[in-house]
Image (cartoon, rainbow, N blue to C red; front, side, top):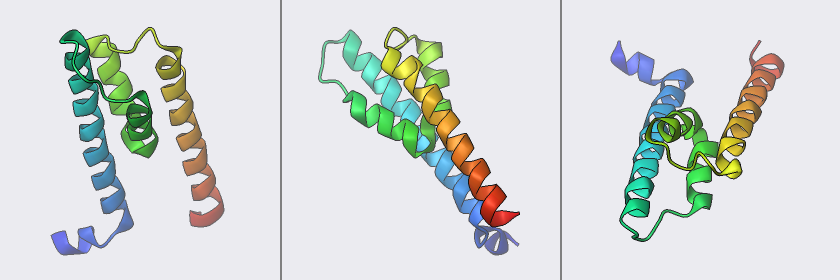
Length: 99
């Protein structure tokens, strides 16, 4: 039964979202700690890439909870824009290919 579920693309998509979300949360938290300790930071490009790869929801919630990057328009506008773009692309793929 479990093997059959693992053969479905939906399983692997959900698995990817969980993994990339966890990585995005950890990266956001590590960057916040590094900022507080004046250590080397995670590049903004890397954080935005993690959001674009599927970790955007988790990263956005984490940013709000730990109050990190909330004054940067690049993040407070950029991540919701990424999420809307991903949602629109997913809806288009579903509509044109999977219905």
